[in-house]
Image (tube, rainbow, N blue to C red; front, side):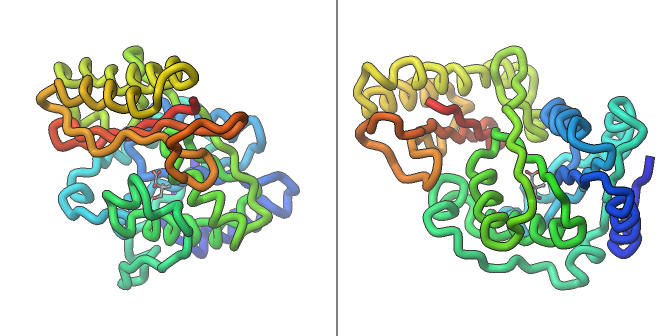
Length: 281
Ligand code: PAF
């Protein structure tokens, strides 16, 4: 298995792989790999023998320094997890200097409404940081396919927008959310939860399922009220948002329009750990 830190070397390896005629797959990650990532790797292996996974905790997408410092890091475990799937995955694990060359700043993008709401509202410039690093990775790899998880649906829309404006040759593959037994969406942040609280987090998923079940028969505001009350009843939960929005531009939905694709989005801070999830309704 190849683990490479240097951009020039990566570009050389990728250029040789392209000469051999096979497609390049890129899975951007921040490490602390879990079953969600495992799923992305397996999907990528269906497309090509050249699957690259980047592991880089990107400083420019964290608006909260503590969040950045506490972000779980486990490169050795990550490498052995990857090896369990295949010895033939290529890993790019650069330093911050290699990526940002001593200039750790994000680029300013115009995403319209997409970065103004929900995560964008609670984490100013988060999506500028995400798009900055993803654009850098796209420039390095020029991949044929890139893989993102639906759990971060707002991020998926940002990447879709970035691809359509700057990287039209890249195919975005959106992979389903992988869940724990209690329904909690698998995330690197789950590792920061204690066992007792972790069990209660199944309620986040239950509330999304509740919204899906009742959206066609109940008033949207009544559904929201029910969900907000249920979540607020748990003392260690701090609900940041529960919103129903359209799946393309993230406009707020007050009244249902036939055939319009809509989603419920949720963010709960559980003992200080931000958990996000969403579901198509
Ligand atoms: O979803 C993530 O892990 C990150 O936001 C990403 C896309 C790897 C960019 O740092």
